[in-house]
Image (cartoon, rainbow, N blue to C red; front, side, top):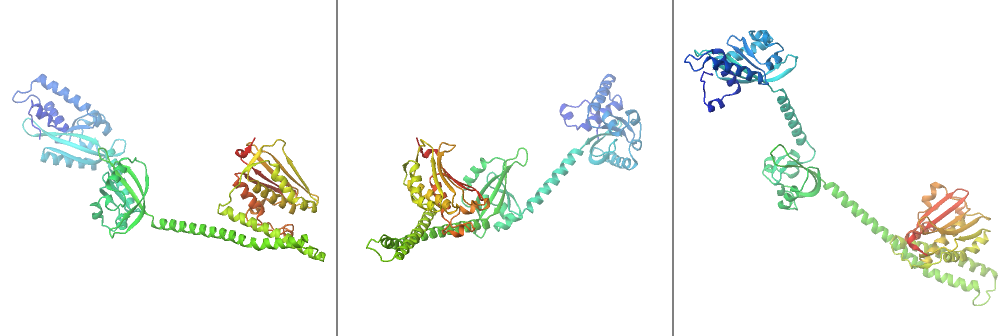
Length: 538
């Protein structure tokens, strides 16, 4: 209980709570001059003014009432809280300003305080004047009259609704976070900047084979293989607050090691606290095993493909030797090098042998070149070449075939066209393949034009255009693959392995040129080879 002890020392005043201070001032205001003459009339007036000013300045609701539960005073904050004017509050009973159930509660609490004396602090739900329910903390203290009897109590009300709501939300968020962490499908570790574990989930225990208590007594370096603790702490010190993804290995309690992908983020759990790190570790054993199988399968496929290419190359060399003999002997018969053969049929047979041999040799040469391209063994013999030279060489080889089909074989090379840095034999081979295809698939009376000009980049472009049967747009990608042919009555009339276009495209690309094919069914086909400008010699 508060007794009249004015004047007090500064130390004594400093120990008073706000409620005790207001109660003391109120007691002085209500009691009049001290029986022993320690407070004079003017001093009492000053105390009364100070009391009213202090109570009114307090932002929280303040009230004081007597032992009969009659309000004897309050501040504006309490008046606004009750929703009544001070005139209606002062002199009114607690039952006049609050519903009966609340009034009963307040009366019981106040009676308990009057009986016990001293101070009382408790929380209660209170309905404000606007009908909203708030959490309120009551600070109450009793005061005595001069004769030592209890004069009443002073109360201060603090609205703690926001604080209670924030505490509830924080508790709910913490519980939700704990639930999510505990039931996450992957192991989760929380550690400080020295690697000391402060929290783990059940999956972390399962993945490593330790109990929770065992893990919480460990350091990350105890199961993280590879980097030392010094290296780990150095990496953590440089880590920002974003997500960091790393791969490593974890060691289980039984000593077995497995690969993990770890997602680490840095956070601060509260003001003044150090950084913590949340690490989500995922076992990637299956992924690593699949990657290893994929690498092995790719290596096996590459080896098999290289073996196939080398086999084709070897086979081509093996076939060349007897073919050269066939061609040699047929040439002797065809030219009657040893004298007349006696019958014209022998000459026809020899022509057939020679023609078939040349055709077969061309196929084998093409296969050999495809094989070499696949194993990157084509080496260019580059020189400075006048563009007309490989075109003329091509025409000399094919002019008779074009004449037999009554085709117009023409060329148009831009006057003063720059020279080309290339492998002349390979460029001739490209043109022979392209013009040979054009002769095959152009009807008698048609036209084949080989032209050369500058392209847009300053390089040289060679076009081979015909008025043949054309290629369907859906089949263009197919005809550029090795060994592929488009089925049509025209193609079935001609033999071949389907290597011409694919080989020409590959040889062009070895030169760094761009190979394009445009065609319209029934109208013809144009193939363009556009060399890069660095192959142009002015």
